Amino acid sequence: MHEQSTPTSASRISLTTYIRWRTGLPLGAKGSLSAMLKRAFGANSLAGFWRYWNPIFGYGLARYIEAPLRRIGPRWLAIMLTFIICGAIHDAVTMLVRGSGASLFTLWFGIISLGIVVSEQIKFNFNNLNWRWRAVWHLIYLGLCLLFTLTIQAVFGLP
Image (tube, helix red, strand yellow):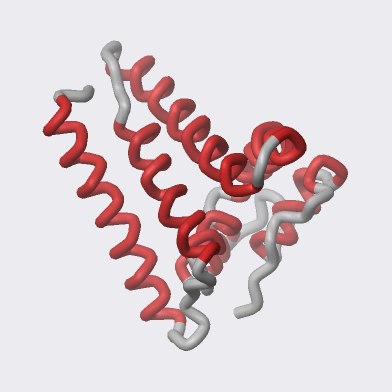
């Protein structure tokens, strides 16, 4: 599967164009969820997974968080801060629902982003693997990052 990165002109394309670009289907089309899952888990890199995951939310993050951050700092920092901000948004929703503190997503997404930045730097990819093995490795990566996050939370007593 050929992967496309987020366009540098993300702020100049519409949400509907972005959704079609990421899923191959129009916004709200039947089969959008399965198309997103197939493309995300079949991505040839850790960063590629997130290019396809939740394209509606990804559009907002690319346009309103990552693009402005890339204008003022290095790409790796923009990626990491975008993931951390995304995690903080998820934690804020969790706190509203639970009525208590939450740090799971902020920490987890920060750890995920560290792996993405490092894997891009060393040009690590899954080009030689078929879809199933790519999916397995993406699940293993997410699971290991979550396990590391839970360990850090337990050790430091974080909510």
